[in-house]
Image (cartoon, rainbow, N blue to C red; front, side, top):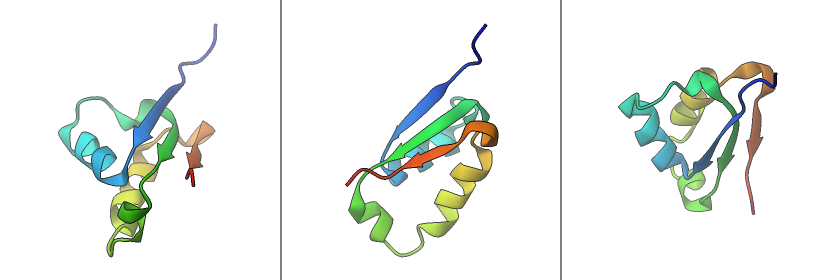
Amino acid sequence: MWPEFHVAIGTLTVLQKVHASNYFPFSTISCVVLYGVDDLLDLGFEAPLEQIVRDTHVSNLHLIFPV
């Protein structure tokens, strides 16, 4: 049986809102795809990104920043 593999796709702002809502546990996410260069260039992006990464399933974590 294959392990669950969940992907989160969105801007940092959207993922931050979903994370704060506790709609689903971020510990089940294996891959995070972030897009939206404007979000990543805003001041203060480090803390929200660190929180999402910390709560994401670390054994198979991939961060993807499409250009």
